[in-house]
Image 1 (cartoon, rainbow, N blue to C red):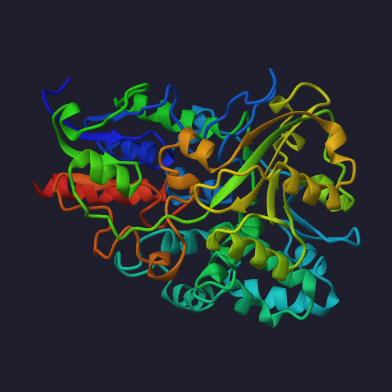
Image 2 (cartoon, rainbow, N blue to C red):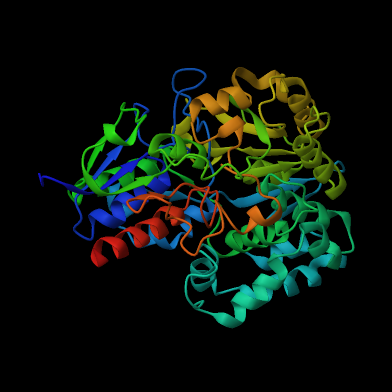
Length: 471
């Protein structure tokens, strides 16, 4: 082993693991330190309820994972990662028993919105179809990192993307298309009337058509395990169960890369108030279920979808997100739900299912949203409660305890609002660099932000190897 490491990575979430893999495969000596007993961060799988029921405590469905330029540049399939595609990527049910859907077919998706909006939907997505690879490279990066690969589409997409989801969906006439679009924009965990939520909605819709919204066989842990296996193959070392409290506890290295919140980085690296202006956003209340059978959705499309959005209208969705951001208790939550065992039977005993749902609540909220979440589920799946064998409940304090990056339970590691929507963690030409020349940050607090795609780790690794080569 070399007397001095090239890089030490703190935190083995998808971004930390990606940064380590990128450096190790370029011949740098790398060591990863993780406080938890297993790698994964927000991409883990555990038996949270009953034996044989394998749940994802955080992320479960990965449209940006299968479409990630960073992941696709590594031989992760050889290390055990296999993507499974549900029949339908997304269903968005309505009270009348119908549903809007997103599938690989733009035509099928457009027609599910009703004849009045099918044409408008096709026109919205048409300029970008067939261009995922360059779009992903251009948008899953820092805006000022050189010229885009496809300047025309980058500008065109940018003009759409900067709009609020509510404004972008004004081109639709009907409630179904507007509801579907608001649900997609709500993945930003911000009111869908907010800046750039249209970009989130459009990116997720395009991902459904181009790459699908898959789950990894065996659960999200498979992504993290594949990355860890690849790092070890390239000569890197990973140490779990090792919490880092101060920089001087780490071995000597030429660079230190933190897959942590900016707050934790400042504390560990002694950077004082470097990120005192960084803001965290609203949280979630998440329930993992062990079920005796599949969810009895009234809308037949929802029974075939990997992800189901529950909250029919754009108005209801915006109200739910606005309440969470404003600090109000949830009353009628918008739910994002996933049913991975529909496509991956290995996740539950035969005939049984795993299912999760989360609604949005204020940061640090200590209430219990189980009843309001299940009332909302029963609206669209009557008899749901009769199937519950066990539930594992996690509000903001539990989410923060599960993952130190989720400050106040914020699973996005930073509010999606104001300038922080496009400039995170603070204004800098290289947002992965810090005031300390050897210290870097690679968590989802940096561009391009949340999601299991490893791109923040990829860009941070690029900043590190440029510096190491210069030195």
